[in-house]
Amino acid sequence: MDFSPSPRAAELVESVAAFVHQEVEPVAEEYHRSVTESAASGTWAESPILEDLRTKARGQGLWNLFLPVEHSQEYAEKYGTRGGAGLTNVDYAPLAEQMGRVGHLAPYVFNCHAPDTGNMEVLLRYGSDAQRAEWLEPLLDGRMRSAFTMTEPGVASSDATNMAATAVVDGDEVVINGRKWWSSGIGHPDCRVLVFMGLSDPDGERHRRHTMVLVPRDTPGVKVERLLTTMQTFDEPVGHGEISFEEVRVPKENILLGEGRAFEIAQGRLGPGRVHHCMRLIGQAEVALELAIRRGLSREAFGKPIINLGGNRERIADARMAIDQARLLVLNAAWKLDTGGPLNALSEVSQIKVVVPNMAQQVIDMAMQLHGGAGLSSDFPLAGMWTNARALRLADGPDEVHRGVVARLEIGKYR
Ligand SMILES: Cc1cc2nc3c(=O)[nH]c(=O)nc-3n(C[C@H](O)[C@H](O)[C@H](O)COP(=O)(O)OP(=O)(O)OC[C@H]3O[C@@H](n4cnc5c(N)ncnc54)[C@H](O)[C@@H]3O)c2cc1C
Image (cartoon, rainbow, N blue to C red; front, side, top):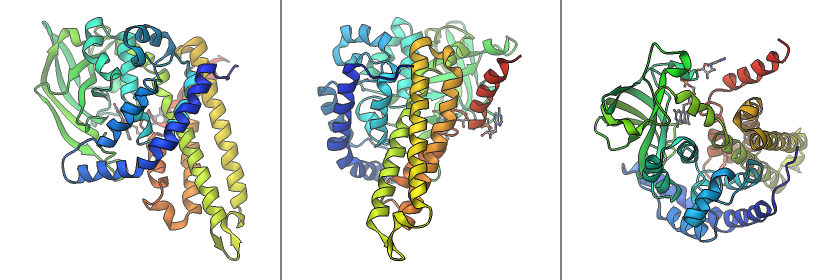
């Protein structure tokens, strides 16, 4: 195992950490207020704060840092800073951790946010030249947003073979019908394309029945029925939508990779784009621990600083150990991805998807408790961070499904 960052990555960690601390943290609260107020007034708008920060970050070369090394050289030659920095996953993990410290804003500042990163990876890996020109370029350039529409209200979507919305080829077109929900990013005013997964051949082999298609957001028949709340917040301006598709027609050229090949794409998509949130959650847990200690040292009850009451010192120690364990597990998964690709890292990727959100949820919960009532208020970022960690125990597939993968691979060794 080699978890040491390249010299370039070590420099970038310093730059990203400084940028987050000096530029992003001071405006994070104002940004949040601005987007929630705009959503409350009925118009979902992006705050100009983001554009200013993006321009600055890009000017310093802190842009598309997630872009996998195998692609960034090609893109760097063509587009300069749009090409990222040629980093491995091990290199990228500590950068994402820094971005995670202000998770609702910093990843967007550096164009390293979900679901666009995952969708960009799909286009990089499987997109045709025409698809890349139309959708990937503006995404890399930060001129638009995208959504990934797989989950459906009508079926248990933790089993992707259940997807029932249809994407059927009809001559030169694909006809799409059905309903999706939890499509993150659809609320953003710049969201212009959806990666849609639909049933195209119900009688085919189980993993050859589904197709992925690019659907422009403004295609007739695409309707956002409502935006869902996550634990009572809209997560604006990103938003998670329930979308109906009624006789939606797109050109056949919008199919990704080929008919019936959605699962091949889903497997490729299991890679880097799906572990970034674990990397960012380490940063969130660090913030929670820091806040817990500062609060515990600065307030007294029963004649002692709160940090010295009851089992609080042990809780702090447990949190430190849990974060460090989780970080090492994330680096291990990143190293396995770097050295053997997604199929070499199936267990490790599933392991971190269980371990990290659960760890972050517990550490953040401890910090909330130590803050008393303040911990649940909006005066501290803890409640929002807890919601995020809780949601990530489902958003990328439920814990149970990832545990199932780990168990299958483990037991398989002895069959
Ligand atoms: C904040 C948020 C953002 C999301 N963003 C997106 C997005 O952008 N695009 C998208 O397509 N989807 C998105 N999702 C949806 C998410 O991927 C699904 O909710 C998840 O895959 C589970 O599917 P389901 O909700 O249909 O639950 P179900 O499949 O109905 O499962 C319900 C429960 O059954 C149990 N279960 C299921 N399988 C097993 C098993 N094998 N073993 C044991 N127990 C099991 C688990 O407890 C599970 O939680 C998002 C969800 C959230 C909360």
